[in-house]
Length: 106
Image (cartoon, rainbow, N blue to C red; front, side):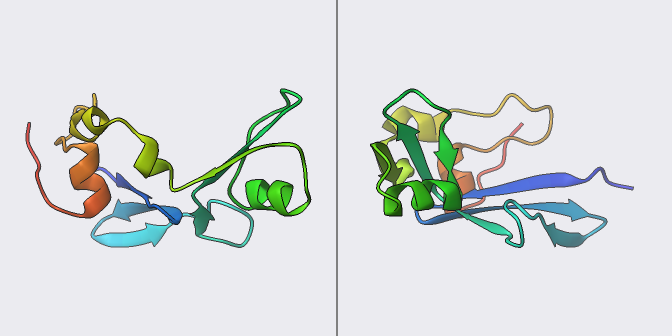
């Protein structure tokens, strides 16, 4: 029996997560009634807690004072795409994982 594997899709517009268990993919609910999450962050000007996903969108639409950010992958430093995970499982770069290209190594 193979241990379950977690897959994360950190997308430019939306993000998702799934578990691979015994050869079957199980998408994980990230927000209430949704298995995708808008890849968005809202940082309130008053120093309140960061909001993500649909809550971030609601803060923007609601006119709250703060900073709204989307397309977060475009602001990551290029070196982050080549940083390898610290898991004991087969490793891949963030770039390979986020683009779907297979570049597994040990």
